[in-house]
Image 1 (cartoon, rainbow, N blue to C red):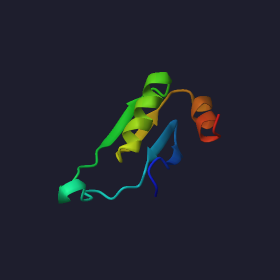
Image 2: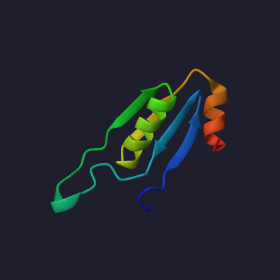
Image 3: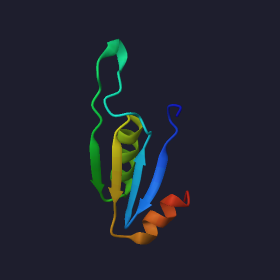
Image 4: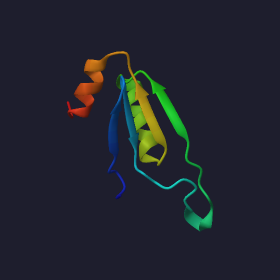
Length: 78
């Protein structure tokens, strides 16, 4: 997957994001990079942007929000 392309999946009141990078993939200089699993509670302006940035870095991110309508709107691209 090219840089900047992301994946999104819906869960129960949650949105899962990630680039799909392999766990422990070799980075620059052959160094192994760690991949974290991050949960962002709240998918407002701060949580959603932070989650997208962490996902762009290759981490697995789940954005959780108590508003099912907000999660559905994000999955629909709104």
